[in-house]
Every structure is written in structure tokens, then in C-alpha cells.
Image (cartoon, rainbow, N blue to C red; front, side, top):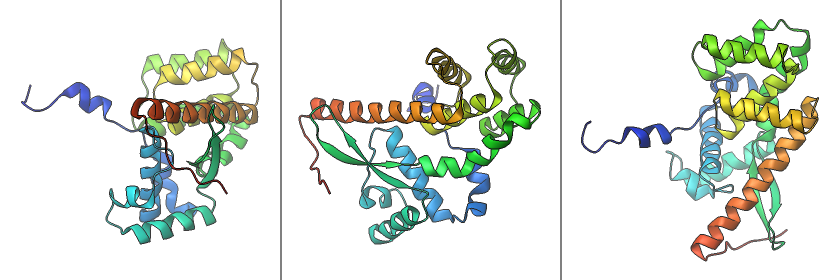
Length: 224
């Protein structure tokens, strides 16, 4: 092994980016700087920082803090980015960025049509998101979801969307999502979205509490 390189660390240091975002952002009216800001927000959330400052984001880009602030305001105005409030166990309120509206813009049209589409469309979408042909084993897993588990194609695509959103694009994670939805009696895409939103909010709260406990530092919170 080449000195100074840790292959395991390299593999862990990966972030899943939606290929639909990279291939369709111009049709949504986004430019390259706006997309990169969204990707940076996605990365910060993956690392446990759910409300990075314009300075944090600009430090990773070739834009100034002021320009980054303008881009963030523009993304909020165009409804590709929202600011939500989260509350921890101590009733402390803090703000978090949500990319939910971005994913809805990317995936909702596909999900609305999926019940009338041929099952082969699912395989095409999986290959687009994974950026590679899916294996025979993966094809069998999708078939099993449809034929044996009787999971609606729209929910399978919603599970794929959730995996993309969480940055955990692998079949085992998608399978866990779908089986969890089955246990909870979730049968529609809207129910799945509500359940996923609740889980993400809980994880965000737990991550903030863990950081506060580990560092002994509580963030300065502005409410209003």
C-alpha cells in the first residue's frame, strides 16, 4: 500500500450526490454556484452540521461570504432551500437547513407517474442514481420487493429517494427503509415522506445534543 494512504478511510470519506440533481439542475433554473452551495449544505448535514454559516460554506468554495449569503437567500426565495426550527430535549430551539423542497422538485413528477409505468423504469432509475448498471442480485432484490413483499413501485422509488437524501446509497439501506415502512403500515408516498421527515428531525436533534455533551459547548441560539 502506498505510504500515507488508507483505502478504508478513502472509502468512508465518500458522499452520495444525486445524479438527477447533476443532470437536471439547469431545467430547474439553477446555476453552477447555486448547485454547489446546495451540495455543500448536503455535505455539512452529512457531517452533523445542519446550519452552516455563509462563512463555513464560502470557505469551501471560490465565492466570498457576501456572495454566498446572496446565493442562500436566492435559494430560499426560489424554494429550493428552507429554514426550519428544531427543538431538543431541553426545549432549546435552533435553525436547520432542509433540502426537502429540492428533492420534491427533482422526484415528485417521477413518483406521480410511476404506478402507470412499466417496472423496467425502476431499474433505469436505480442505474441512474447509482451511476452504474445494477447487478443480477440487485435486480432480484427489486423484483422481490415488488412480487414477494408487494411493495408499490412508488414506495420503492421513494425509498431510493430517501437513501439519496441521507447520503446512504446502497441496497441494504433501501431494504431497511422499505421494511421499516412495512412494519409501520405505510402505504403511500406521502406517509413515507412524513415518517422520514420525523426521523431526520430526531437525528438532527440527537446529533446536536451529542455534540453539546461531547464538547461541553452549547451553540448560541437566536429564536425569532
